[in-house]
Length: 144
Image 1 (cartoon, rainbow, N blue to C red):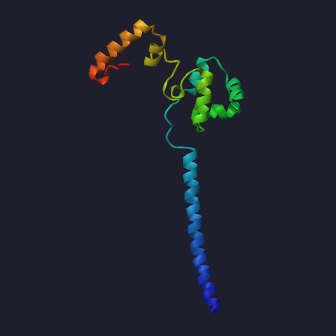
Image 2: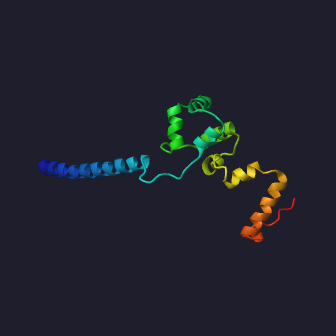
Image 3: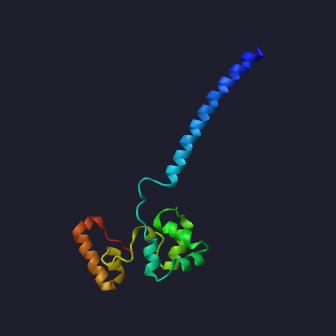
């Protein structure tokens, strides 16, 4: 009986080992895919904000306590960023964290660049034009 149990044990363990090795291969492939996605992430504008403020990779990296290589990988989209980094960079670049993700400060014709450079009277005109273009109902008057 010991031989039969042993043979069954070897057969079952071999199947388990085979399944485990297969599962590890799939896991390794998934991790590899997560690290190097086949599709590029949406663009971010951290590098543009750094350049807009006249700072080098080395200066910013030293200021926030990371290597310039790591910061470069983040700016290229090869390494993930976190909320804390966005907040540190936004403070340094004198912008909002969301600006680093959606707004290219080097795009002089971008709507936010136009808005930023407009005087108050011009901003009122921009609002009026925008309300006309998209429909007044899209921008209900704010009282307060």
